[in-house]
Structures are given as structure tokens and as C-alpha cells.
Length: 281
Image 1 (cartoon, rainbow, N blue to C red):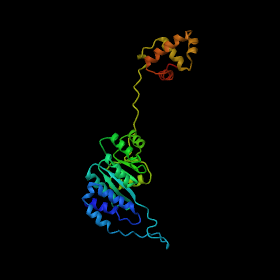
Image 2 (tube, rainbow, N blue to C red; image 1 turned 45 degrees about the vertical axis):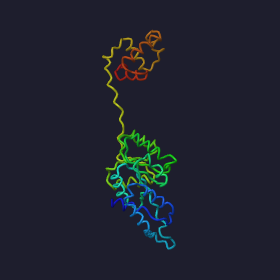
Image 3 (cartoon, rainbow, N blue to C red; image 1 turned 135 degrees about the horizontal axis):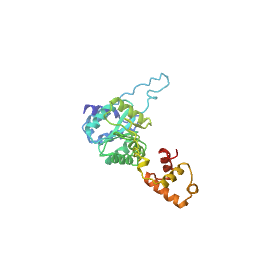
Image 4 (cartoon, helix red, strand yellow; image 1 turned 60 degrees about the horizontal axis):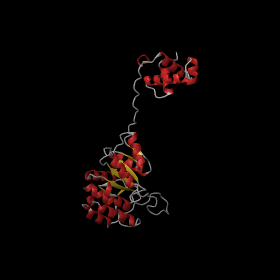
């Protein structure tokens, strides 16, 4: 709980130059049941403005803090309070990150997210990938945070899952078992506009084609073998018919039987089968 109190207090300041943005952050934090435990500390700290660090650019006319970038505003959605508190303790020491709100249920977080106007939403793992993708889609709607980037706190096991996350509007994902420094790196990269998947998902490999039956086991007749051989030489049905002195319909019938026996679905595959099995010499 000390980490939660310190992290929350550091992200909230009274309305000075930022005006209503800090008040929005304060209300969002106090609305969170977890933060009610630290509410008195938050309010007392907010009453004492923290001094802004002086700018170090060295220009005599530069006002203090003029070049200091605004902190990235982060909203946490995590069902487990202990996990949420641990994540806050990782983010809190970084002066470039500010947790402006949190919630435990994505379905009831949209109003708070909309008020907080975060730059980045960290979405904890739910009951399954489909539920998480539905939550991402909801967050991207106008009543949520359409301008925010969303990172899922889970692994993408395959490239197919990674593609689904991107199509739903997410900016990637990472699991919470990463070292703290890698979590901070991931958050900063996502805030800067990067798409990331940590660790890299496993590419799906196509299923190997079933082994072909040897030519002497497929039961081709002599005519079917002859038709297949001429097909592999690039001849049409009409040309094969002239070569073998057959009707074109008869050639088509023999070819159909040969393709069925060898398990080939079209003329090109049947011709390649004939070449692979030495019918063309």
C-alpha cells in the first residue's frame, strides 16, 4: 500500500498551469475503490504544490520547465488489486509517466477512461482473448478513449493472435512477468507510437502435406499413365487425343480418373505429380 500511495500522490497536483486536467485526474483516482484507502493522503499532498524542476537548457530567457515534456497519461484496467498495485509501483518512479486513473472491470471503466483522457490504456488479462479484444474495441469507441493507445497485459502466443489484437485496435501486448525495466521500456515505446509484442509471438507453420503414394501403388491403368505423361509435357486434351488416337472425351475421362487416384485436385498438380514420379523420363 505505501507504493500505491506514493505512486498516486506523485501523479496528482493541484490545478496550477494544467487547470482542470489535474482535477480530472484527482476525481478519477478518488472514484477508484482502491484509492479510497489513500484518499486523505492524496488530498493532503495535493494541497502542497510540488516545485517544478528548473529547465537546464541554459538559455537566459527560457522560463522554468518550458522544455519539459508532459508526462504520458496512463489508465490501468486490472481485475486483481495486488497486480494493479504492483504495476503502479513499477510506473510511479518514472517522472515521464503519470497514472491518472484505474478500474477493475473494463465493462464499467469507459466513463472513467473518458474523463481521464489518457494517452495509454494498460488492459489486464480477462477471461480470454475474445473478451480482451471486445474490451479493446469498446475503449476505441467515442465514449471511451478513441485517441489513446491500448496495450494488453498478456502474451500473443501466435502471429494470428497478434494480428487479431491489431485488427481490434490494440497497439500490442506484453505479459507482467517481464522485468520492471522492460515493462517501462514497453510503455514508453507504445506511448511514442510503436507497436510491440513481447515476447515475439510464434509464427504459425503450415501443416506438412501428406506423403504422396508411390506411382506403383495408385493403380493407374496404362492409358491413364499415358494421358498423365502427355499432360506433364504441356499438351492440351485435344493434343493428347491426337497423339493417342483417342476421342477428346475419352482423354478427359482418363485424366479425371488419374487425378482422383493420385489425389491431385487440378491439371497443374497432376502434371507436377507426373514429373516428380518420373513419367516424363
